[in-house]
Amino acid sequence: MFKRLLPKEEKYFEDFKEIISYIQQSAKITYDFFAADSYDPDIYLKLKPFQNRRDEITSKVIKRLNKTFITPFDREDIFALVKRLNAIGDNLFGATVRVDTYCVTQKVEGALDLISIVLLQIKELENVLQDLRNKNENINECKTVQDLETEADNVYRRELKKLFSTEKNPLEIFKKKEILDILENACDKCQSAANVIIQILIKNA
Image (cartoon, rainbow, N blue to C red; front, side):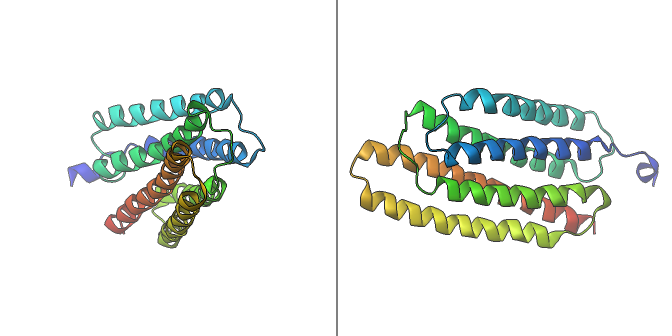
């Protein structure tokens, strides 16, 4: 009873809102990167500030969890959500930087399709996170994220099949496959974040 009377730390909702905003900006830059006729060699400089800011927020949330007595929902769910959100941005950063590191000059077929799906997933996550403070049951939006991840799996398999059947250079296969792997993993992380949100909504229904 006493625990219920204590004020809950509400800053976490602002943290979620801020981190998804940075992820969305990173995703848009990543989309433009893979959509361009030639890859931008300065992509690291454009994305690194967003990665740094996301890492700062994640660290801040973890430190606050160790000090806050009352949280708006289970602290392990807060920890899981912020980690999974941050992982989306890490994958976007990793995919683009590898293009530069591996000196990839040819288009990575399928990359633009995958980042397009990530952008749709992020938009759905942004919508549900905005309403999470009021515990509105936006489970349908979370399920949309899951459905999009299934679509990403289909794109990934299609492009791998095409890559292995058309590319003759083993080194190019390795480079392009890893980039596709990371982008597909970004879709997986979006789904993982949606799963955590569903868990939160069910627990607090």
